[in-house]
Length: 83
Image 1 (cartoon, rainbow, N blue to C red):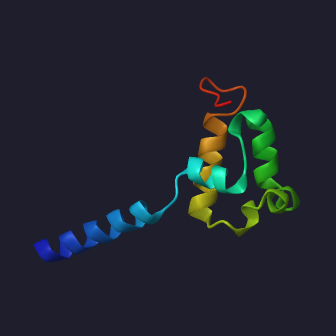
Image 2 (cartoon, rainbow, N blue to C red):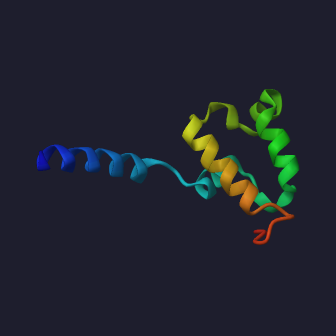
Image 3 (cartoon, rainbow, N blue to C red):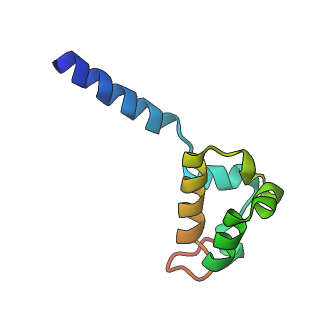
C-alpha cells in the first residue's frame, strides 16, 4: 500500500514539475502581462481568433489556465503589475 501511495505521489509531482509556469508561457509567446488590463486579457483568451493570433490556441488546457492566471494577476490594473 505504501508503494502504491508513493507511486501516485511521484506521478503527481512529476507532472507539476514538467508543466510550465504562466510566466514562462507568456515569455515564450512574447506577452507582457501589464500591456493590457484584466478585462482585455479575458476577452483575448475567450475569443478563438484572438487566442490564435497570440499563439495560445496550441496550449494545453492546463497551460492555458496557468497563462490566464499569470496574465490576470499581473495585468496593468492589478495590484502587482509587471512592466
